[in-house]
Length: 386
View 1 (cartoon, rainbow, N blue to C red):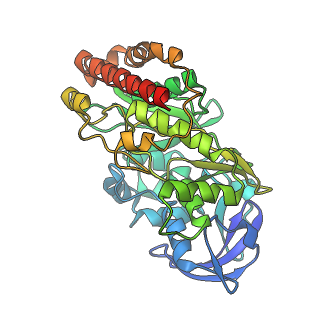
View 2 (cartoon, one colour):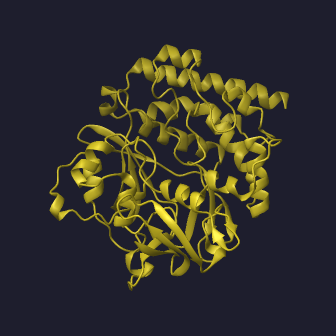
């Protein structure tokens, strides 16, 4: 299929897709190099096809998504990348899309920020049975990344992401609420979360922080701004890339993100769930994105005794151990430890709904509270020493 990669209404580059696999077979004329996705290089006026395929694949639902195999069978779709072309690659995270050649499609008429979208894909991803011959596949769910069950819904006119948790504790949705409230105490820019229940199962709900005029560029794309250096750590390289791109206050943001992730023992702060926001029209950088996606934390998949030992608590993205990553923080002076004295109340309130007791018992809640308070005490020592 011959198509144009578009950035809102701006033609960017000609692309040839294999319609069966949705792989990019060829890259043609570049119409506007400034609007190429961040980190896709040009060589003699030709965009790098391998990097383009990497960028395109990252827009698709990962094959590791919970329940995705059954969902694809229900949808009658061979793979997750094939879903991308069914919605023209449109997303609720940025303003890129694919326009088939010789069509009169307009971003204004089909983007998901201003126009309604189908619930069919989201329903199937959440286990509903639907007739294949009447499915409407125009949905931002086709471009939602991550392994946990999730979907986009329009709630009271707002684009909201609904996200589940993993068995047996289903704890991630509650962790999102706890992390957001801790960030609220510390004055860290963040996305707010609430809990919604469906058929006795908890889900986190948050409003999209990207608008029709902005877009999220994840850290892994920002890292493409400079060639990899054998002498730079990933942390140092990211800071340099932000400086090169004129993204302001990156170090201050990373200080806060690392401290937050230490407090909650976040195990999955990978390079695709934090980043920066830019103006999609002017391409000017607005700043680092508010912190979101903190659910894989607070011993979400561990027993209480494992939370206490913290031996198996993984760490990302810069170090393998949280205490080592904490060493990257350059300033602790912004932390008001007095405000963290109420963290136990925040945790108890998050689990106060009686329905939560089916998944999270009192012993587990106490273990979470104790582990958070223990890390805050260690953080105080670090701040004092610094």
